[in-house]
Structures are given as C-alpha cells and as structure tokens.
Length: 514
Ligand code: UN1
Image 1 (cartoon, rainbow, N blue to C red):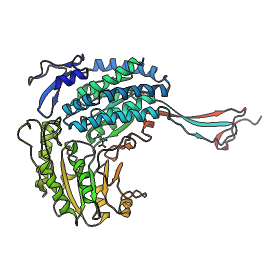
Image 2: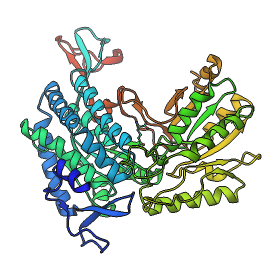
Image 3: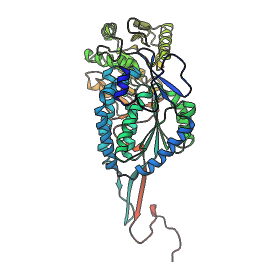
Image 4: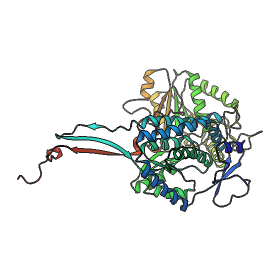
C-alpha cells in the first residue's frame, strides 16, 4: 500500500526519500523516519536539511523572489490555478498519504487536500483583486492612494495535524501576492510535505517560474531557529502549540519582523435548553471525535444547560461506545490513531488528572486495544466535571479526543465559562432562539471572545472563505480567506502632487515668504 502510494506521488524516486532499509534500527544521522501512527512502523526515511543546505535554499528563494515579484499578479494567479488543477488530479493519493502519515481517516485526508484546492481557487480570484483604496487628498492637485506590494520570501512553519492545507493557506495566497514560500513542515509529516511541494514546484517550473515554492525539512535547532532569526524572511507564519508560538513570536518581534500565529485552542460548544439536540449531537460528535481530537479547532469543552445535560450526554455516550476505531484507510473507521506515543502518554496523563480532580469518566479513558490496534490508539473519552464546576485540567489543550462536560443555569454564566480559558480560537452555540444566538455574538464584544463563532454548527471544519484564527493565546493571526492576504504584502501609501506649488498637510506654513 505505502510503496504504491509513494510511487503514485513520485516519492519512490525522490532524491530525499530513503526507502530501504527502514526498520526499527536507529536511522543514520541526517535522516528522519516518517512513521505510520496506525502501526508505529516506518514508512520511509527523509533526508534532513542542514544549516548549509538551508543557506542554499534561502539564496534560491531570494533570487526567485526577485523574479516572481515582477510577474503580474493575474499571471501569478494562472500558475496557482494550474497548481490547483494538479492537486485535483492528485486528490486521492495525496489525501491517502495524509491519512497514512498522520493517521486521520481517509475522508478527512482527502478533505484536507480539498481545502488546499479551495484556497487555490480563492487565490486565483484574488490575483485580480489585490485592491488598494483611493482617498481624497486635503490638498488641491494631489492624489492619494495605497498600493499593495510583494513582501518577500515568507517562512511557513506547519504542524503535523494539517500537513497539507495550512501550507496551502499560506503558500497559495503568498504566491499570488508575489511572495516565495520557504516551508518548514513538521518532522512528523515530511512525506506529505515533499509530495505537496513537489507538485507546486513542478507546475511552477514547467510554466517558467523556478524557486517560488521552497521546502526545508530540518530540526528546530538547526533549521527552525535559523528561519525565525532570518531577516530575509519578513513574515513568519507559524502554526503549532502556544509554547512554540511564544518562542517564535518573541524572536520575530525582536527583529521587528511580522508574525502570523495560529496556535492552540480550547474550544467549547454551549447547548441551550431550546436547542435541537440531534443537531447539537452531530456537531459535537464530529467536533470532539473527528481527527481523533487533533485539530486546533477540536471541541474540548461542552457547556450544557442543566435541563438537557443528561439527555445529551446519554446520546453521546451511546455513540462513543459504538465508534469504530482502527486503520484510518479503512472506510468503516471513524477514529484513527494519535500521532505518536508521546501523544498517548499526554492523553493518559490528562485522563488521570481529570480523575484526581474529581471528574467522572463517562466513557473511554484508556488506550484502545485489540486486533489492528497496534499503533497509538486511544478511546474517545467524555469526562463529567464535578458539581463544584472546577476541573483545572480542562483549561489545558490536550491534543486528544477528550471532551469535558460542564453544566450551567444561565446563558451569561455559560458565556463566561466558555471565555474562561487562555485560548480564543473557536466557539459555538446550539440554540433556536435568536436572542440567545445574538447574545453569544454580541456586537458589543461581550459574547464569545474567540476568532471563530458558530451558531448550530460545531467548532471545527471552517470553510476557507472566512479569515481563520483566534485571539488571546491562540496568537491573533488570521489566515485563509477574507482579507488575510494583506499580511503577505506590504502597503504603500502614495501621495502625488501634480500641481506646481508645494502645500504642506495640516495647512502648515513653512519657510521664506519671498
Ligand atoms: C488546524 O487544526 O490547525 O476549521 C486547522 C478546521 C479546519 C482547519 C483546522 N478547516 O477545523
């Protein structure tokens, strides 16, 4: 299966891929093993970049940027359109590689590549819409407007859980904006990165544009550090943990670079007494169990009105008990493995803490074992928060399928609970009341404090057309749709005096009278 996939994507002959030997032996220095989390067995090795090869890549990126910036934006859009088409042709194998390498189920792997295709389409349209404003000048015979210019080579650092789409959000927008991308993927998903970048690079080169899509696969000390300190990268877009974001944010801020951070979430769904409970169930089930709880948008907390909490949790517990856990490439599977053993340990640690802190495990709580479950599988878990309402572990983002259930009496209380965490990525309410929904979305800003707010939908599964990201410890960045493109360009405010006299703004008189 895996050899076949690698062949379909041209990775079997890729100079950086080491197919044999891949066993349990320690890899030779300079090679990272990509493992299948469903079996714990290596798929292939990938040669790592060093400080030296990083420098070479950056030199190419700088030269590539100098050429690419001069290509008219709509022509750049045509290159992105061709990349989107090539991704369409590779949708299934690439989606399956995502599933194989990071363990999300096949439908979600393919959905992820679809997300990249969608953002490519969005970027093509955008390539003719990089609009600046024109503003009236206060001075006669003056014109004022703004133009948006290419920014430079941009650094993209991605996490394992969206090894294709998060690159797409950044690289596709960056490309139409005239930027060259330098992508450092997670070392847990190097094969997806190689296959993805190779498609973009191949299409762009065939159209006469070399060095627009660069890839560096390396360790944080050797390559990550170099990138974040590198003044040749005016923008670093980084996705990952809050801990990682703090490091990246402070280093980039010190050199006065621009950062786009998309960090952790601790997303909640509020369920009002008037909610359609079946709809709520579906939203919660996908939000909490989908991707085995490894999305930054995963539903981690449920805040349910006391009058419906028993009914809803019973429904969820029944579904959790029947969930099919197993090989992500098997069509029947709903829940694949966690990414590695460390993630399983963190899951077990969080469950242990929840117990110690008075939480009641309603379902799950342990490793998932049995036939075909030799990899890093855990049981989707629901924890009922004690009557005191206090469960400190629920304030942490554990990247695993654990759902903490809180109860409330009033909506104000529920909104306060939902906002009472450090992160501010995604939030949702299920209700049939306009009043409750609008209270949650309050235009005064006293509702949800998150970057994403949903009504009668779960917390995960955003469309690419909106700006994606969140507040507080989530880092404040916005990627993907809406006007996120502006971060990949520099704004220039232009003022032209087409008259013959010098007039100063604010009516200032300055200088000799004759
Ligand atoms: C992530 O987990 O880093 O909204 C991104 C969603 C996806 C993106 C998740 N479109 O769940």
